[in-house]
Amino acid sequence: MSNLSVNICGVNFKNPVIAASGTYGFGREYNELYDISKAGGVSTKGLTLEPRSGNPVPRIAEGKSVILNAVGLQNPGVEEFIKNDLEWLKGKTTVIANVAGRTLEDYEKICARLDGLADMIELNISCPNVRAGGMALGIKPQNVEEVTRLTKAQLKKTPLCVKLSPNVESIATNARAAQNGGADCISLINTLTGMVVDIERRRPLIANNTGGVSGAGIMPIALRMVYEAAHAVEIPVIGMGGINSGRDAIAFMMAGAAAVQVGTANFTDVYAIPRIADEMNEWLDSHNIDDVNQIVNTLVLN
Amino acid sequence: MKELLATVKQNIEIAKGIWAITLTLPESVGKIRGGQFANLSVGDSSFPLKRPLGICGVNGDDIMLCYQLKGDGTHRIAEKKVGDKLSVLLPLGNGFDLGSAENIAVIGGGVGIFPLAAVIQEHSAGRNFYSYIGFRGKEYACLTEEFKAGGKLTVATDDGSIGYHGNAVQAFLADYKDGAYDLIISCGPPVMLRALKSALKERGINVKCLVSLEERMGCGIGACLVCACKKSDGHNARVCKDGPVFEIGEVEL
Image (cartoon, rainbow over the protein chains, first blue to last red):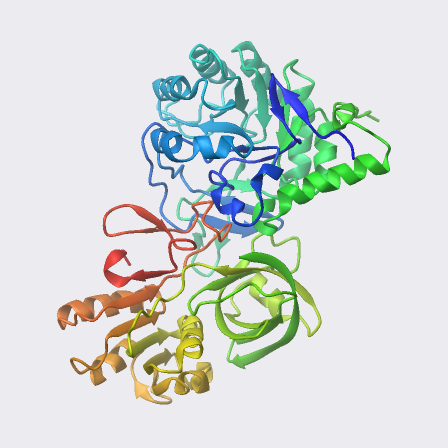
C-alpha cells in the first residue's frame, strides 16, 4: 500500500483523485452508491450567488469517446449550498467549492462568502462574463489575472485555485497570468468548445448549439496542456481531462499534476473515482513506489 | 441502486426497429418498481454515456429492457449476443406509485409503452388495467400480450392497420366514462402527453394522472443536472431522480 495522500497549498487530500465539478453534484447521489469519503476530494457543482435554472434541454450529447454538455450552471445558489450541503460534504472529504459569476463583483462576493468555509475555492472563469463583453473571463490573460487578483483579495483563509480554459491562445501564458494574480494553484483543463449535429434535422443536438467537450477523447490535449502549464508556473497544478483509469491519472501526475480530477468517467462507471484510486495504488505497488508524490513531474522528454 | 456487470440472456427484435434485451444480473438489486429505468452501457468505451432505458419486465434476477434502434449506440447494443456482458446501473428513478387505485387507465405511445408494461406485470393481481397503446402501424406493435394480462387492451395505430384508427389518447377518450377509473398512468412522446394534458382539462376529467418523462441524461442518478424539466411552480426537477414519473399538472410538457 503506497501513500496516496497529497497536500496542495496546505490542503490535504487523502488521495489525488478528486471529483470534477459538474459531474458529481455535492456528492450526495454518489454517496448512495459508495462511501464518497473514498474520493480524495470533491469539486462542487459550480456555485453562483443566486440560484440559476440553467439552459434549455437537451443539455448533453455524445461524440466518439467524448461528451458535450451545456448545463448552464444550474445550481441552488451559494447560500443553499452552505445551509444544506457544505458541512455534510466536509464530513466526508475535502471540499473544493467551484464558483462562477456574471460580473467580477459576483466573483468577489461569492469568494468572500466561502472564505474559511470551503477547504479550497476553484474559480470557473470559462462562463460568459459581463466584464469580458460576454466572452469568458478565462480567455484573455489580463482578465485571468484581474479576476484572480480581485478574488484572492477576498480570501484570508481559503486557498484559491484558478481553473483554466483550454480555449485560449497560450495555456502557459494564462497559467502565468493566474500565478501573477496570486493564485495558490491552478486546475486544468476545463472543457473544449464543440458541436454535434443531427444531420436529419440539420440542427445541433444540444439546445445551446455548442457545448463543453470532455471525456477520454480529449485526454492527449489535456495532458499536453497540463505539461505546458506545470512547466510555466511554480504553483501546484491539478490536472484533468479524460481520465478514466489509474494509468491515465499517473500520466497526468508525471506530466506535472499534483492531483487530478475525474468527471466524465463517473457517467461511464459510477465507481470510477474509487476504482482509479485503487488502480493508482496497484501501479505504484507494482513499481515499488511507496509515495505517489514521488512520480509528480518526473516526465522525461524525448 | 447498483452498477453491475450483467450477462445478455436474449437480445431480439420484437417489432420493426424495436428490440428487447434480457439481462441476467449477478446479484439482486432489491425491489424494482414499474416505471423505474436502467442505465445500460453500450459496451464500447468510445460511447461514454449509458443509455437510459425503461425497465419492461422483471423475472427474478432477469430484467428485460426494450429499446428502439435510433443512433449508433442502440445499434451497437443490438449487436450484443447471448453471453456478452454489459454494465448496467439500476434501478433508477421513482417509478409509478399506484396507491390504492383499483381501476387504472394506461395510455402509452410508441416506446413509451415499455415502462408501463412493467407496471402491469408488477400489479396485475388485484387491480384492473384498461390499456390504450398506440403505434404508427401494425409492424411496430409489440408487448400486446403483456398489456392484455392486466385486463382490457385497446391497440391504436396512426395508419389504422390494426385496432383503433388514431392515437392512444384518442382511443382512451373515445371510451372514456366518468367514474370508470381512479388513476391514469401514461408515457409517450411529448406531443402525446401534451395532448393528454389538454384533453383532460377540456373534458373536465379530474382523475389523478401520472406521466413518465424522457430526457437525454448524463449520470442518471441526479448529480449532473443534465435532464432538467420545468415544474409548474417554475423550479427545475431532475427527470432521472425526482422523476421520471410526475403528476401531469406538476410539470410543463
